[in-house]
Image (cartoon, rainbow, N blue to C red; front, side, top):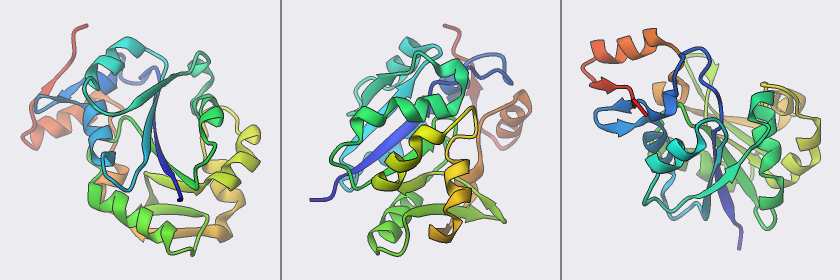
Length: 203
């Protein structure tokens, strides 16, 4: 039986925002919980959340959800350090879905489309694309990831792997939820203008 993992990267310092973006509340639900919830589907066998900065607060926001946590002590070294942290947990999996914890509007439909495209056997990497830009989640075969994970550096994450194996990438038609992330105060203001209630977690 093929096993699929979802790995949510939630270790960053939110340096551009100045406070933890993952614990900002949008209409009463935290960004990280909104980002994780769409992955709670039968097709995904296990969800791993990589924490680092403000780890206990992030874990608290996901209380009650069937997820496992991995702590990255080297989170200040960038996203690649979080990806490397999951290496011991890949055994037995066919492929991994990587998602960023600050993308709270990804849809379960988009995730299923990525999964189904990978299952069709046409690619070792599947990416959503919208408005000419690539987004998340990224699905990558475990074998390919294991071959390349040692070459990842800094905050580029999987971009180097995607560029190296661009002939193996299949794109799906995404939507704004695949691109939208929480990075700046201006983004939070935009959400308020759209009618969302935004609250900062004061912990």
